Amino acid sequence: MSSSALRVQPHTVAAFDRIGEENAFAVLARATALANEGRDIVNLGIGQPDFSTPPHVVEAAVKALRDGHHGYTPSVGVQPLREAVAADVHRRLNVEIDPGRLMIVPGGKVTMFAAILMFGEPGAEILYPDPGFPIYRSMIEFTGATPIPVPIREEHGFAFSADEVLGLITPATRLLILNSPANPTGGVTPKAEIDALVAGLAAHPQVAILSDEIYDQFLFDGEEHATLLAYPEIRDRLILLNGWSKTYAMTGWRMGWSLWPEGLFEAARKLAVNAWSCVNAPAQFGALAALTGPQDAVAAMVAEFDRRRHLIVDGLNDIPGISCATPKGAFYAFPNITGTGWNSSKALASALLEEAGVATIGGPDFGVHGEGYIRLSYANSADNIRKALERMGNFLATARAA
Ligand code: PLP
Image (cartoon, rainbow, N blue to C red):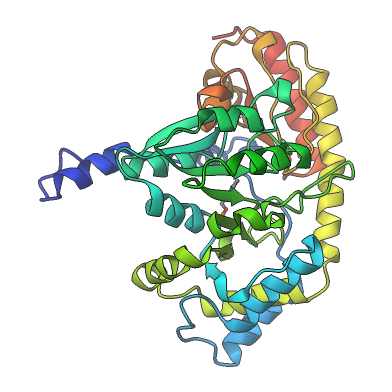
């Protein structure tokens, strides 16, 4: 950006120099390029379900177009969809939320974009999980705020620690970002830890909370989702991020929702009016069918992910030098590779793609605390997972570590 002859404001140039990326998209592009050259690539890089959107959802969107839903909708989303989100949250999580504070937004990312824009400015500190979804840090840096990583540790079950989070809060802290079940680790933070965190937050009323619960239905071993919505004492400063991308295999539809506290809802609504007007109308009707129709496709997908989870964890642990904790949520395995002799996780991920034909993501793409790990998405067929494991085992047995 800085070499451009275009007259962009200096502060804008600086902000765009700071904005980051999501390397999963770069790995996807490279994996696709290699496949187009005729290479046989198993892609465990990108995090999207390999299932199709349930047919009744597709039909509802097609019908909406045929019925003439081709125009603008209210910028906060169509009312039946907002009410369906509130009903779904009540059915699943047993909490009441006000549909009047719900915004239908184009994907999960949009909520973090809006929330971080609202709180980020030079001098402000924003806490975010590391390793964690890369866009948190990228957006924090874009705003000029100071990113404060909350280390997410294997020895703590990849859950965040309430004590550690509370210990990082300063008078400059404006926003705390939480994510459970988590990307990239699959970690699930126990309810007791969240209880302790919420209790401790009472002493820090200036801190807003963004809880990214986009994987809330991807839970295994009988885990129940511990939502931040269950704490009335923080409702006036909680922003909740969720959406359809993962749960209903709808990543390309760009459908998300967020709940905003009263004091922020108007700001979020105005941002929508300025930036995207409204979400694609037929997609909203598809999303409505997803929530109000049968949920068996979700259950079947989660059951299948559970089978693959065991397959991938067992297979990874059979490879000398790799140790993989069993993730309790999402659809990622985050094995520790420090015993392989590879000192750089990104170098290993790159070599696995280029030389073994297996796309994974290096842990540092999710933050400095991701060094020593790689992320594998098991949103791929059992056959492909077996193939990837075999290739990884053979590669590590023969290749020289870099
Ligand atoms: N939050 C987390 C933790 C994610 O892993 C992702 C996608 O991978 C998102 C949000 C963004 O979801 P969407 O594709 O709906 O923007």
